[in-house]
Image (cartoon, rainbow, N blue to C red):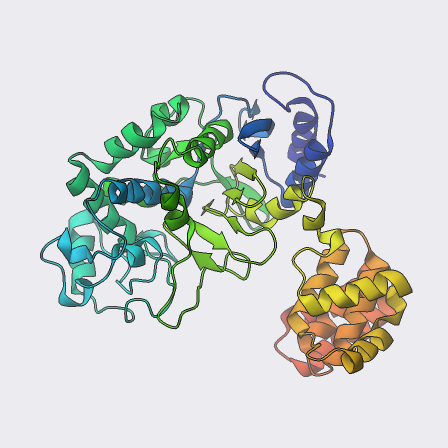
Length: 486
């Protein structure tokens, strides 16, 4: 362990809730484990249960260079979670009767390209507009130097696809929404959001931080970090003023929790139907939803959606560093803000929710498909060494029982995370049995044999993976490493 992470682990043990030291509880243990595994320098947590903030936590370092711990005053850049505030602002304007989600953008902004004119407010909110992006997402810069040049260029570009055809994350959408808010509210969108949301929710630290992200001087601001070639380095983020409806805000987990409570208590949106509109994922032209990932499989009015039968969530995420999950059916909301791009708290918030809702725990099968849940139940009873035989039996006795390579592989890694290496090994063996032509299945099995301490079988499976896919550089590197260590 590096000296920094030794210091981090000590800091995590000391600085928990507020400025006091609290006894470790299961939430603290969980958070600290995730921070150490993901090498997150600093993190802030707030949990809302049935309209009350029941847990807040400050962990690790806000500023690594000067060893400044996260505390109640620490403000984190929330990146694209800002879009959720923009979505609320649009729904507030809907409540005043100034627009509807089905209104075309040309009703409010003149002189747009013809292909843009019929794009609706809903399509802008949900990134289904097809309008070209003013930001080069790979390089995180405008497509031309300067705001005016970038705007002029994006106006000249052809539309990417027919509006409503697919989901494609795009900052131009929120630039246009900012212009709509400016026009219909009679004030800059930053003032409107401050007046109609931040002040009403008592978000004083958020107001003081203002819009503009890290180019502004913000008191108690957490530093931004990322890893490059295994080393922690500074990361600086900002957007020009006309794009700050997309990602311009900073806040604290506690104030974000207060904002969620105000939203659900109809302090920000007065009509009960408005919250339903805010959180309803947009439908594509084919009637389906789409989003960032298999988890966040829909996108509503600035709010990504985890659409699923059990415990659905609306889940704004920002910069791979912060996330806010609201579970409307469960009376639960969890806010996790970090200062690490790539910390990806959205990957572990569901499991944290499992501390309150037991059937959401991965160990109880949450997130698995119906066939995998059925197999899990049988193997929990009969033992995982019977995985191949039990799978064959279930296939004969259950119509439509089918396991995909991807979900078996994913389940195997979930078992690894639960420290069930032996059970995971049997699941990866099942995967290569069912999918003997899959290089990835053999690669995963090789990895688990290596984890299990069986070097010969690890090499054998990596070699089979490399045979199936000669471009698998990971298998090639692992074979060399394992042979050198024999």
